[in-house]
Image (tube, rainbow, N blue to C red; front, top):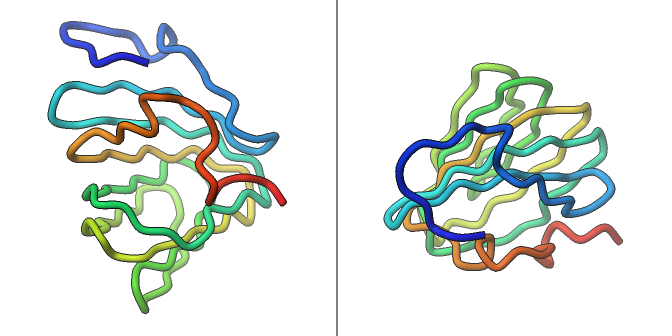
Amino acid sequence: MTVMFGFKQLAALPEERITDKLSRRVLSGKQGMIVWWDVKAGAVSAAHTHPHEQIVWVLKGKLELRIGDERRSMSAGDLAVIPGGVEHEGFFPEDAEVVDMFAPPRADFLAGGTPAYMAEK
């Protein structure tokens, strides 16, 4: 994936299959990144940290999210902000669509592939 500028349509972004339960579309500029996730029930994002600020927006379904010591059940329309360097994890009890925004962009997502904390065990 590359850094882009100008106009794009979501459907034109390549869909990357991360695991059997996770796929994503990524759009990145120089200073920020947005990721659309299609998630199947049972998917897990294990505990991890990264230096990027992350904003989470649940479009559909449910997400059980822990940020630091706080846990919340999120559903469509809910938002969360995860500061850089704060441990967090998520579990999806049902199919979901989620948008994540990162600043600055995540080089590991631009490189493609499955992050270790998302790998199915």
